[in-house]
Image (cartoon, rainbow, N blue to C red; front, side):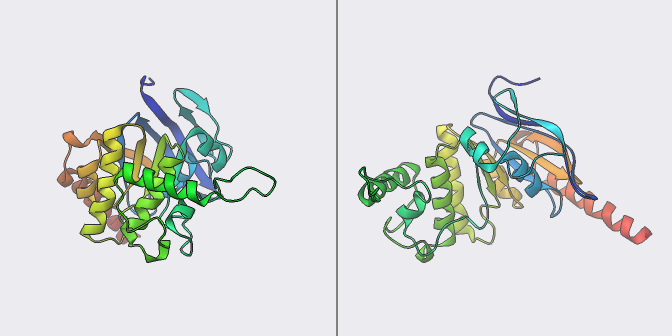
Length: 258
């Protein structure tokens, strides 16, 4: 049954690459304004699921729904047109360009006339306003991306997706390899987005404490299936840890038996 405020849903999705099965039978849902934590071991299928939800891969079997209607995402551009955006670990930022040019990368504002001159003034002003509205603090929108910290770069990538009118935002390990201060910067941005309720978010993460800090609900992906789906208020770090430890033990026993 589809909930009235449901934005995106996958039902019984599988994905195979030749003889390799990445996803077996995944059903996942995301409600308006919700932040969902997606956990799972390396190779569990998290990245494959993310690429299906953003139109990069097509599912082998199963059905996607967007705002209650069946949808077949034909490409990443098609998904973006619906408002589905992803921020991957490589961020897709150009280090040599400044912040405001990165904010408008491939969607630059141009002035009229036959020459279509870039309107740097408008892009600079708009970038400043948008970043300030999102609570992203950086030295200046004129600074090159390469001179920013990892947390600041991640915040710029998230802000760019939101500015491009994302309704569904998928974040792939947004705090990976970051210290506590940098991670706090990103989690603060996510908290602000959550408070506004204009975008729903799926966060792929390994850090359970961060998931419980910012997420409304958590899913665990194991062996190509969602095996766990609970509100964060109804579970605990210990329960999730126990599930993953049991998975490791089962895998180890299987290896030893062979």
